[in-house]
Length: 185
Image (cartoon, rainbow, N blue to C red; front, side, top):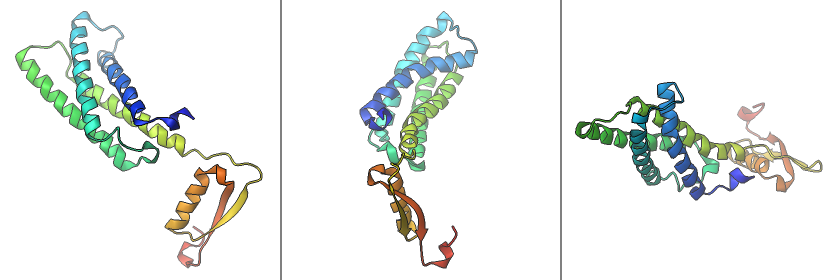
């Protein structure tokens, strides 16, 4: 499956495309029309290029291109959120400084909409790898059935590994444990 073979350089390219497209979508959502006035185009292009550079650098510094996303957890989701918030803070600071120097015909709310859309898009791309990796594989009809000794953490790890690896041709069907507190769970 293609999505499982993505490497971090692919995430960089996907983020590049997302970061190029989302500011335009944010402006369209803000204006509630598909027509963008001519006075907004220059500001939109400048904002898109500046935000692109800042976000890619921030994402790199926060390690979004050095993670193994197949096992992404809440920690990685927090890392994505923190990277988006940090990059947004830098963009807002630059935007405020630039508006003092040169008035810009650009809605400030676009930055917030852009940030929310980027958080959703970047998170969705990365967690789609995890969700695709957690699909239950199909087993051959002649697969062995297995009872796992121990219903604790180790037994859970064994069961997950058996479920993720159909090449083992073993289907976990239950747990056996001598601890009465783990019975019928």
